[in-house]
Length: 363
Image 1 (cartoon, helix red, strand yellow):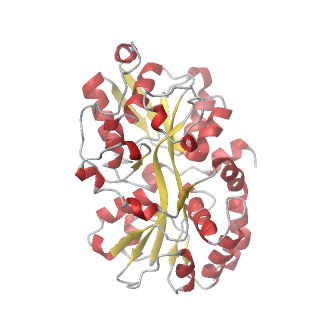
Image 2: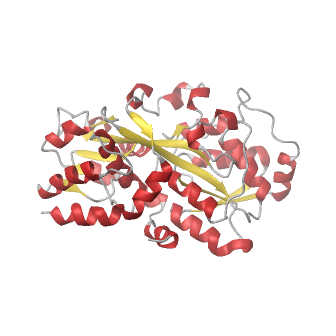
Image 3: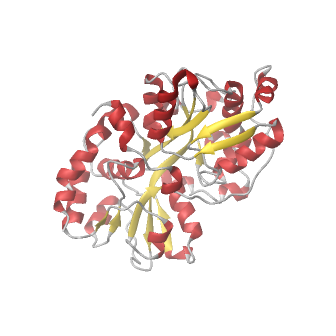
């Protein structure tokens, strides 16, 4: 499967995958931990006066608060078109030097792909040193602003004794919702998390495929992407999804106490989303200033208020209201970062392998 085919396969927008929680706007650029902006950047961005993004709707990860701050503090009018990571890159590639987009927000595995297609402009924000090496391109073409870790939302009304590990889950009679493997990054990562727990890896997915095939053969596997509506009507006992989606969906339920959220104790994986500044951005300085703000203390707190775990978490002192919107740090002990190069290779064939090994077992 070539790169263009890979781009066409992932077409679900963020709004389709997660409506998110509308978080309170928190204004102001926090001073602690933030170096001085490069000389002249603010003035140049103000002169451009506008920021055009894709895949960064206000109700995803609380981007709304950041757009409000950039308008209030720096006079940047903002417009976004919601689309998937694949669609974002396809648009930038197709428009080339006639680019209409300044910045997008793409999944981890798309960062290097975007650079390879020549559509990323390198820019390192002032807080660059506080971003872990595994979460950034060494030259500044991409860097994760926030992470997602595969978690479970367990319906404790239907499953009072909630399993806490993948091995325990596969030993129960629980119905599991994994989503559209091969299409959705969240579902793909769910398969990888199970593989890691069962002794596999990015290039050794067979243990997970076999385990999910058993669920499929027993009629206990839902392959619809998790949503609040599905959780409310009890489509499954256990929903596999990003931690920030699990938190946002539960918050919207009429009876949120029906669900317990946890990170599996025997293994999970952490991925995330990275801003990409278009090589041919019509407002390049506005895009650079936006990246500066996103990685500042204020920008990172905005993300936390949208249930997204800030990449600079170890260097922040989150306000109590923002901290309360995240899972406890102790839950993440068994999670490890995705090995993005190997995972990029593995996801090329994951859809076909899922089809042949899991979907054929459905009864």
